[in-house]
Amino acid sequence: MKLYDRVRVINDGYEGYGIKKGDEGHILNAEIRYGTFCFYREDPETLADDASASVRIEDLELVEDGGATDEDILEELPRHNPEWGCKVIDGFIYNLKGERLNEYAYDYHHRRIK
Image 1 (tube, rainbow, N blue to C red):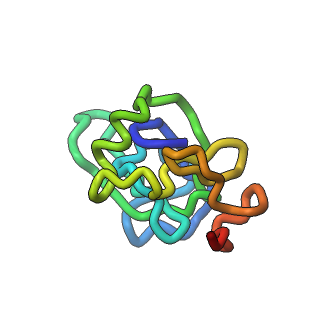
Image 2: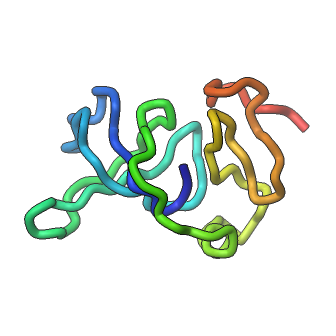
């Protein structure tokens, strides 16, 4: 999962933001912060802005690749810093330098210390 990918929320807990289990939307920001991606949903009828929230990585599943390249992601990262976590591949968080940032797959809250 990464910037612009279409994702589905697979757990409850975001109802206060108008987002429920099963809702689909996109990853809006490039960076991963505190084990979350910024999830953005459009109204399916009007395609207007509808709801957004920081959603835990483990509460999202990939629906469709959004096509963002590493260059697109770098452009959107804070200070264009390639060390920021920005991709989830096979349960691991990676930065654009190819460094894996969590020691165990799917353990998004215990990051490696360099």
